[in-house]
Image 1: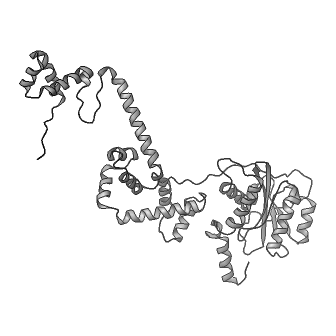
Image 2: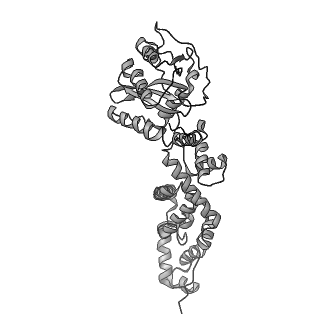
Length: 393
């Protein structure tokens, strides 16, 4: 049978030390109290050293009253260090939901206090023990699977999809969920879409060349391929100056059918090669409307002559009205939000060319969903068009 040790509280020990002076001898005081003299001797030494800071109880440090402030500062410092240590170790789990945090707590029960971990990681102490005892409910399992799918979609699309597009992708996987709920889980998981950035305009409209009227007049909804092509130019900063990207987009399926990345704004490095690429990639009949801004690259004689050779009809935005070419502007907005590094680190020219090719040919034209195409990719949209008409684009 285990021996039972009697415990004495702080008040009893302080009175016992005081009794020594009254009885003049330590042994007499010990006999009156019915305790061992060695124990009373130990209490007296402790009281002489720590005074009223003696006998704090099991688990508490002893300190002299004069060192109270220093003791409290050390205590706060130790608590802050412990908090930092736990948070640093738990950081991979913090945005993965309570279940993963519970797993972390269970794995570290021998290293840290459960109550302390629950407090620092902001989870309920009682809920943790219920989870540990009863396991994961079916609803929690479904929520955990949903969060994994949500994160997979978010990172697959390189952090560029917001709640609306992610909701559409989740619907394709069979989830029945609203945008508000997706937004809630994204906040809970710490998933934030990369924000748009502002860029300067590149249109040089101060020239003496002929400018065409705005025939398109913001009628961006067309009924078949190669009825209207829209074009624009933007600049991209690299480690060695700027590169200038020219794109030509078919308004029906929103595909980039022609593009060129040049080192200058001359027509031979921008609009002319992009137009030749578009004409080679997609058959266009006479009367196609070619819409652009009033920049000199579109108004000059060489480009006008090239358009005339295809018998296209030229249409230009009104001066200062970027909304007249909104589809092209929207593409550039997506490009700069989804491709350009938000940390402002610049690509080399070679790297920029590689990234632009990957973005246009292997992402935008193939895998990216478009709200204007009823949340389909361009490939899906054109496949549906082929099934309906028998015409392959």
